[in-house]
Length: 487
Ligand code: NAP
Image (cartoon, rainbow, N blue to C red; front, side, top):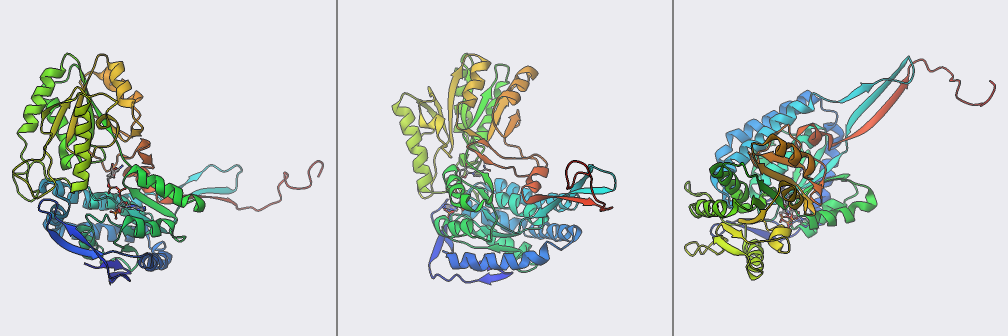
């Protein structure tokens, strides 16, 4: 495939390409250009030129175009979901959900963008008008990871465009194909230059986009390490940063939790997309007395999940995105076992699936916070379970992390619910229904999990800068102007 610049397919100035493979089979699906800083400069120039007119387009017209993009995505729904499954690996139902969520994000921001422009505030004196205006920044650089390539992109470009900005997108090198196809089929009615896609390596295309002087906003989702790098690279230009970073989400099971429902909720929270979700449950806390029965039930449940290619309808858990990512999971499990953890389920590559980057869903007990598997982001299908004695201790353990993306609790005890959402430092708190998103619900991290919020009104505000207009309609001479003292 080619890149999408200024409303049409564009060749890169470089001859190199990046091979995109199917993680279920390791077969090459297609190639994309390994873009260059010159490609980024072309795309930014197109986006900058388009911004002048795009910011003048009425909010209603912009809304119609965004609704149009959503409608076109609906027309191509099956094709996009299948392509996403082939390049990213997670089961087809999860990708159908991703496409559905992505296109509904366009509809949501189409409406929100034509509802707000700012506000009128009380003026200091009569005869004055004070406006708080919301204005687009210009060109927004959007950089996304491979695990939810469409969804995380639409969480950025839908509000950015609704707010009147233009965008240059850098998709993940592991999963850029669906993004290119989506832009081709769903955004072809937008003025040229409003939406641009430059493929290529993070260290080349990403760096060039992040440091480009005509890109005042960077909307990034990815690892904390790359987020820190972007913050360093942009400090000199005071860019607006919107950083959605890594997590190490806890799941606390309370002593009143119904066993079967809690087991099912946890298996889903930890294993959807083979555990490769920023808000995957990565550590679990269970009352000491409950732990043996709970862990056994979980291991039994997890052992019945069906591994396979995401494209097959019977698959519950697909492959991981690649061998390097699986190697990190293997390291975490090996280190935990070496320090005394016990594996109750999984803990190995499935022998019958040799070609893709598969790893069996893995349940571990006898873990503690000295182990990497309880401290660092694993980003794989692991469920380490630790015992706690009091709810105070459970909250302390949940907070014992540098991350603060999400946190889950299973209970029907209202006092525990209240304590949990008041005391746990995380951007999203889920009670009894983990990992459910809400278009109107702001999503993002505390602590090292990031800056800013996506979704909701907050997700639109990220792409506006605020201007205060003070207008004295009379224009008379004020008694507080010079000279001071007697007039
Ligand atoms: P990553 O390595 O940080 O990559 C994310 C994106 O950044 C990719 O497009 C990557 O390009 C690009 N990139 C890499 N180096 C760059 C640089 N120097 N300058 C600019 N861009 C650069 O993360 P990942 O492994 O793809 O994704 C997994 C991580 O994302 C996990 O930590 C996960 O928690 C996090 N995540 C967070 C959220 C959230 O909402 N908080 C959601 C999903 C995922 P290449 O693909 O070319 O390397």
